[in-house]
Image (cartoon, rainbow, N blue to C red; front, side):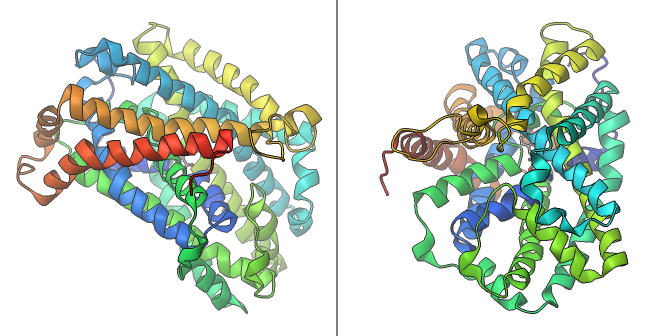
Length: 464
Ligand code: PHE
């Protein structure tokens, strides 16, 4: 164990921080628009299955590797005795850098909406397109956001990350629950709920499958070493299984509630015409201001402003974990002092995000950045970064980590690490399931979906 490595102060601190990493824009911004993008309730079902059946075992593995080695995702593989696998950690760091570069931009939008709704500007919903192309303004919000992230990360693990997570996550959850109840009382709420909860299996095509898988990995912060890093700060006494279960449940639960809140709003604002619903990055930003307006000018303004403020905080607990990964790597492996590593890496990632910032219309080049083979429409830079960083690299990372655990590090070593905090683990049903998932289910399913996704998305080869 590295001398003096800081620790989360207790189990709740770790769970709150890991859930803080998991819960963010992925649940509240991305999940509803992916549901609307394709599949409706069928997407929701696929997403939940992936979270619990495939991602949960991957999460257990990541946390176990982190705690066993007390290292960053690159050093962890050396510490286990397999330096050749360091590439997997590097891949994770690259994915994290990609993700943070666009995530910071969207977090800035959310923060800007807090300002707009504080001013009572409900019209911002219909002006979303112009809003995100006011580069001076959204650019300034993105700067503020990256500064806030870097500041918390520079203060180290328990000082910043833990404290912020403990207060803000429960508040956000409470607020979403209240809004779910409110949205149910609106006219046409039922049409929205039906769209969200009654699956039409004819809606499932391969695109729905891989979008749901990418969403599950993204939402749970898996496949890039964030949980190896957080796992490295976990005490040997903690039960990795129950912690992972709680994190998965709270993350999937909050996404589910966010959808339950959104779709009655959507139905209300479209007079129940769910067929016209279209998902996209502007989804919550165009819908929610109108929904808040329906609450009333004063309360609606208050609720709306608070909602976007909490969303920005939820995003902050995620950006913190995204920045923490390359920083821990630079501190542990490159022996760079933490405060220099933080500011340098934050600046670098911010710069990488500039093309995303201007790719929603402002710059023609970045808005029409690339046309995948077999596609007519060009893909913007911000979408391209998401397709590569989260939808492709995260499931790939999950696939490789299960291959590593099953065939290189070996299942009994994983079991030993789990048993240190959960002595009765051996022989339980959950042990058998994790064994099956890590050795067979995840490698096969993740490997196959990964290959088919590459072909389908980037090369226009559609199998299903
Ligand atoms: N899980 C975060 C969210 O849902 C995003 C994230 C992805 C954070 C990967 C860390 C690592 O918003």
